Amino acid sequence: AMSTPKTLLIVYHSLTGGTRQMVEAARDGAQDGGEVVDIGCGLGGGALYWATEHQAHVTAVTNVPSHVALVRGFAEAAGVSARVRPILCDALSVPGRAAFDAVVAVESACYLPRAEWFRHARTLLKPGGVLAIADCFLCRPELAPGFDRYWRTRIGSLDEYLSAAHAAGLELEVRDDVSSRVVGFWSLTLELM
Image (cartoon, rainbow, N blue to C red):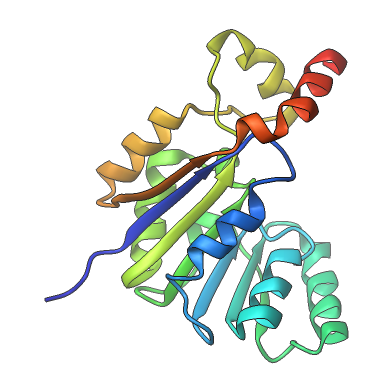
């Protein structure tokens, strides 16, 4: 019987504090040498982590043209250029069907249309694959305007994400709210907003 893809949501509210836990937990979905797609890879830090620490073959997805060469250069400098493939692509257009052991999105899922993205992410996963998300989720609706302005997007609630993931046929395996560990960062951020 085919195993269904799963989703792994790690809830956190900072640029620090949750990413490490997320990648460590998602490692089960992509054993060493597995296929990983890093959605919204930025300058490739996550892709380099997967390639160097877990010998993963990583497709690093960015929608910023100048980032492709930067990610490629950083991968060459780290000695993992054979395992990191940066591509210029919208997250909803990532090629492949049942091609990845893990789909990883670190602070990028908030920029994507939830339902459509979860459906596409599920098609990218091999049977038994893992979708790992580390992002900010709106817990207090009255703070939405400030957060939406700051991130230039619409920050969604955890329930919104879970509902879209469930509708796409994904199952929740792990949920880790690390908010209490980063409360100082967010207290300062809210004061500055």
